Image (cartoon, rainbow, N blue to C red; front, side, top):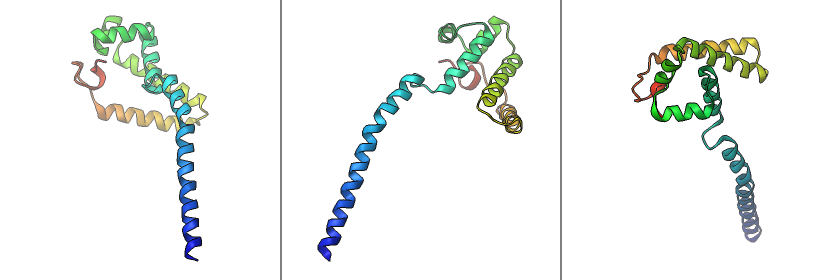
Length: 137
């Protein structure tokens, strides 16, 4: 029986190797599509930039260019947009996205509350480019 067990082990191992190789090959197009579709930076970042640019009355490209020279708080000040107005607009955007995804009002309210708690716990971030809200690209 030893020969039969050894043969089964080899077949099992060969099957695992085949599955691993097939998975690696099949995953490549999906990974490429994700990277191409999201610019390799993440979809959340793009959505955030779109909302912030809209709030400031700019295109995403204009905002990205401005961030090369200034911090976001500096750009907000130049455009006459307060932090509260920005946070309100970002919250409206989040609420709309969650509603589009079919979240209940109860879940949306919980998420909005958690969002405000995170904001309160985080406090004011420096606008000197050292991190958080004032971070330069």
